[in-house]
Image 1 (cartoon, rainbow, N blue to C red):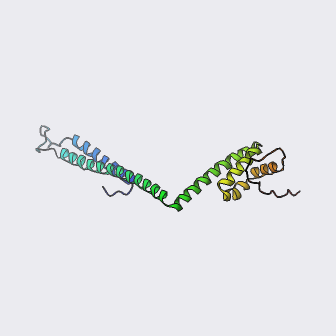
Image 2: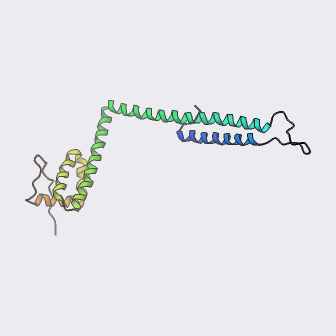
Image 3: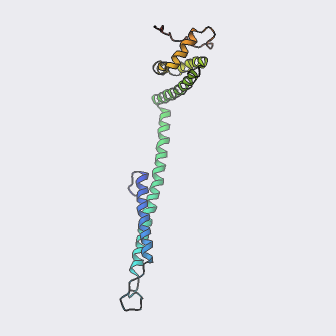
Amino acid sequence: MNGCATQRQALIVAGVGALVMGGGGVLTQVPCHSDPGSDGDCNQPINPNLLLGILALSVGGVVVVSSLSSVVYLGATADDRRVAEAASARDDPEEQTAIERKRRRGDAKLLLKRAIVSADEGDCTTVWMINSQVLALDADFHKTVFLADMGVTRCLAQAVSSPLVDPAPGAPAPPPVPPVQP
């Protein structure tokens, strides 16, 4: 390749190559300067501007093609690297556990958002059901984050004290609610 380490570097080099090609194209259009008093034809057998232009077009073209092939190559190797990392994660039990923990934490966060909205709307039955789901997903998140939300805690306290709310069958007992001090 052309020594570029990133796709961005390769694109910059390709841009420089394109500029060189543009300059070469301009040079091919510049007429040869004739001597004063002559009939306007160039005294040289080959126009030097044309030669310089063709050279610049050639060099610029090589730079552009090389750089763009680096962009494609670097993109492909990045994709290969991601596939290899995913494959190694499948084979490593610790990595698999970490991925599962992260997924469960994400699910618990989404449920917390739903519980906050439900608590704001006064729908404590929904908060109670979400409470048991979050506890089952991630007990640490439940203890440190879910129960730290005032609206959720207030709803859970109402649900525990209300004889009308019947927890879902098999749901864990609600956490003890400290008495409210006047």
